[in-house]
Image: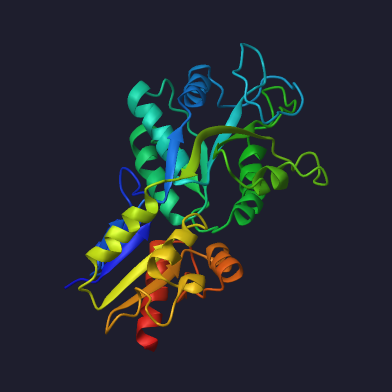
Length: 317
């Protein structure tokens, strides 16, 4: 029988790379949502209006640097973008939901930047259907910082061929539109707009919040029920994707500070429950806050990275 693997995340739509990968590798994946995501429909409507207003393309005049408060462009202004950035599957899903409900009024050919193969796969499905001539970059960068440095080279190279008008006069470089969640790091805008960079190297970035996130009240109960449902299994894996929900997860499994005289849910009889993290941020959170060392930390934040870590661990036993 295929061993269960509990994935502490919301299943991505329209497809989920973790579901595909672990189903194909003789596991039975179950998704246990930790976070509740609420889309900002008014801001997503603003994104649609940017497409309708022809905001993606070369700037026609220079109105100075952009800000992080996106305003819809008016005729003759320079509020235009040469591409988009997605570092979250939720941002892609919010964008997709807006398109599915309202349609996309324009289909420009633009670079779409993303970080991590899972988000790239979700974005690819959307691109193929609605932005077929656009290109996706950054799937293997792994972190926002790596993506930002890649964009400094890649996007600037793309713009070199489009920075002069027919008379040879230089045109102002369009910025990038970054669809983000309410909670996010600012490493990408800071890196791209670093004032120490040469002016012609800097890339203006506008962020627009398209979703907000909070831990689900029902997570601990839902997770406990899933663990109970795996009671007859010899081996069960739990994959943790963010610091959110770690305390509840450890409490249910009676691990770390919640362990008591060997009676943890992970070590009853011949049964074993093992914990893997998507990367070092979540691993360090478990270490530093709870004194718990996960069994696996993926070298790459992807289904393949998690799977390879699990495979090595099981071989070592």
